[in-house]
Length: 198
Image 1 (cartoon, rainbow, N blue to C red):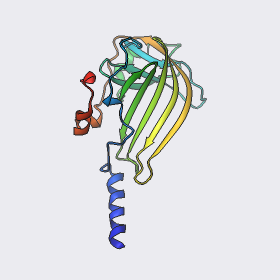
Image 2: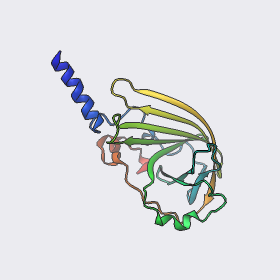
Image 3: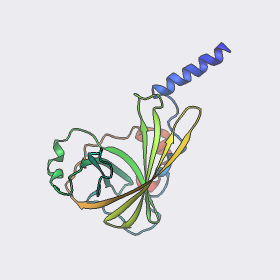
Image 4: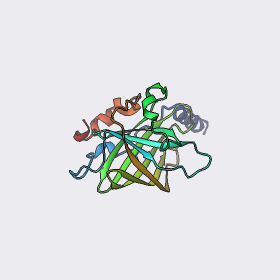
């Protein structure tokens, strides 16, 4: 009995330190083609920015840039961006990194997945999936968020429905300071990576 308790405690310690299982079932976008059709449904030379803020306590707007290799990068802009669009002229002065994630296009939907690994949290690994309807090349409708929580004994899938609009803003000079995703060097990632993403 004591040995069993010790084993459980060791597993909990390893997981909380970021040593536990990393390839959760929910992370799958990288295994698929970037798009299941040949149409150009989104734009690349620029950024999609949330149109408005619905919460009075929020001060930031989501911003997403897509690459042609199936990766996208997210950051934030100030809530008054649409009134003052000079943000990108000074973006190089910002020191924070953007988040790197994977996406795929399925019919009229963009599926974006973040696979997060944090050593400062007890449950250190989780997957955040966001789904956007493509209304046209300039407009995305953020409609659904799915969280796959990598709990040791109870893996949970939490679905949240959203209703936000992102508008395209042409800015070809954006140069994000991107920190490479931690899973890029993992064997399971390289083995499963779809050829269209290489």
